[in-house]
Image (cartoon, rainbow, N blue to C red):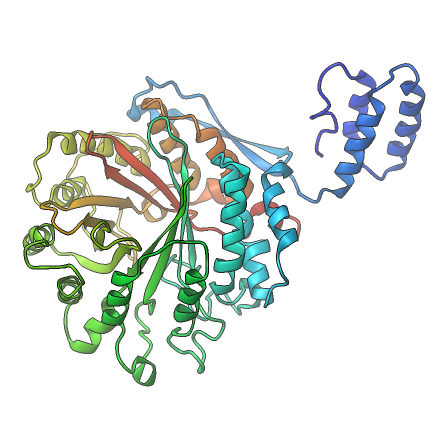
Length: 517
């Protein structure tokens, strides 16, 4: 039970402490109120505060959630000692209703939802998960309001059918966004050394009829969602969006659509970064449908798409040409192309690909584009990446860079990367996404590895907030016994050689809600 004295301050009567141990509606509780009434004559001023807290408690519905408490880690603890860091679950601690206060404010102002599916994504699934993350990342209330209102009105209606109405474990339209088909992935960008984290998320728009005869290839949700974005508060430039959307769409796809039963059928993602100044959008396009229809490789289709883009010339794609030269030396699987929805001359072109080789030597090879990039700061960052690699995948033990990770047979196994560049840049920049859901022992171990990493770099300020958010969203059993909540740990090496780290994870019905059902 929530402590009735947690917010009464100091100096109250010790008699009040008995109140926190009594059920709100029990006979002993009522008897205690009678005793307190008598005692109030001797201790003026504190009983009204207690009664106010009682009324508040009676209206609260949040349940207890377990709190993951990380043992203190000295900044001097070496990575190889990370496996000695212990975690403890302390059960029956109170869930802080303040974390959802802005969510409740937004909820009270919403127009009636058009469907119970929209209500599910907002009220039971991702909406409250997003609220908890925004609070944990210490977003000011006005920004929490901005981001939650946008999610409720512009995102939730386009996430497809509620999981509550799905038969079995597989959605009617399984999204490639996550391994279980959930069309949304949340992320926590840990930011710079002194800066606060940034919350982001990615989605696949899904229509309510996707996968059925009316919309077998999920083509109805995309245009409707794009129209919704145009009417929202987000500022976007769409020159490149229109080009790539038209390029990757296969004419008459609806009439001749044949579902790929061996792979995903996703055609587009959107992503949103919730920065302090604005919400910025990105779009992700998949080349596989056009490649299959034309008998080409994904790489060929991606190259043609970029060469045909507005402002693109044979003289300002040098970074891509360098990577294409490197790609002949290694086996890669090309997944998608992403752009920022801003001025094309400022937007990044990002190509995502997967490599089935899982040695750290292969990581170095790709991150340096086969040794073509020789910046000393890049190699400094790779040394730090190796320590984090060992912490996440080998419990902190030093391993040979030639050692492969354990064998995993899955569509999303191997290591995911992207390379990015802007028009006119000479060198691409690589980023790695460590697939911790496949290769780490548990989500609790992932958190311990991140905690050790950040404390070694004196960057652990927001780790308690992150732990608090995770303990509110996920059950202790799920976190301790297996991996799968965290999907990736993204790492980019900044120009100064430091790592930019992003935690990606799959949302679900928050644990404190699931426990109440």
